[in-house]
Structures are given as C-alpha cells and as structure tokens.
Image 1 (cartoon, rainbow, N blue to C red):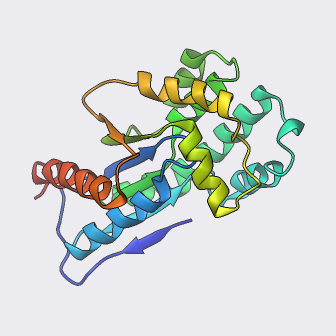
Image 2: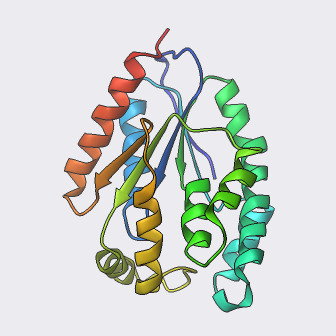
Length: 214
C-alpha cells in the first residue's frame, strides 16, 4: 500500500531517503509511521508510505496464510517474504526513491532476520540473500517493547490473525532486533507515551534531513 503526502511547496532533498520502522507486533510501528508521514508532510516534504507484507501478489498470499500459521515451514515463510520484498523493492521503493521522495517503510528485511531467525534459520544467510537485492535504508528505528505489553496491545485491538504472537517466540525475536547496531540504527523505548516517541523520532529525522537538503 502507498500513502502519498505532498504540498504545493516541496522541501527538496538531494536524493531519496528510506526510513524504516521495525519492532515486534504491538510495538506501535504503524502508528508512528503515520505520525511521521503527516508531520513531514506538514513541513512540505514529499513523503510516501509502504508496508510489509505489501499489497502485492505475494503480500496477499502471506496474509492469507496468517489464518493458518502452522501451514508454512520457516523456509516456506522465508521464501514468501523474499518474493514479496523483491516485488515491493522494484515496484514501489526504487521508483519512489529515484523521484527523490522520502519513503517511510513499516517493516523491512530486519523483520525477516528477526522472525525467521528466531525460528532457527541462519540469520547471516537471511541477511546475505536480502542484501543481494534490497535498497539499504538511511535510518532504521527499532521500537522496543516488552513482548507481554506488545501482546496486550494486539489483544486490545482484537487482531487474531497474526502469524507471530506467541510470547516466548517474541522474546527471541526481540533479542535479535536488539542485536542490530550501527550508526543508522536507532533504538526507541516504545513503552513511553506515544507523543514522546513521535517527538523523538521526528527530531532525529529532521536533524538527518538537514544534511541532505538541496
């Protein structure tokens, strides 16, 4: 899915910018992605939003399988996510970035490393096969929350068709997410109030954009 926001006066950047939000289910990624998109839009930036699984053929297949999570082996899950991501990169991400848009992406290949890695697939293999075709992000926000709190949030939303909601499993997923380190990776305490989180993310993004404006 793409949500596009722009104003008549566009704040130009030198090149496309890819911003990724990651974290376990219930961390608040989609909420924060929408807030960030709206705030950048208000400041005049040309912004688009995508998510994984995508709205494409393979993304729809993943969503169908969500109703029967035991019907897929970890390797079959990995294969579907790779197919969906390749399609998303070529049809959505690259074209938007080539037009010098700011792309906000809800989940990316770090989720595959974490979720499928927690099921026993070699994390480095997952990383290598993704890095053969992905566009590398400029900023990656990991929204970190205790799995029990994340599951409580999902329960409150009454979403029952998720693939990956088991608490013990999400503990493993979280630990993999927390292992990602580097200049582009920003770990955010997602147990804080929503407004504090959005303000922190916005500040970091705006500081980054100062260096890439025309």
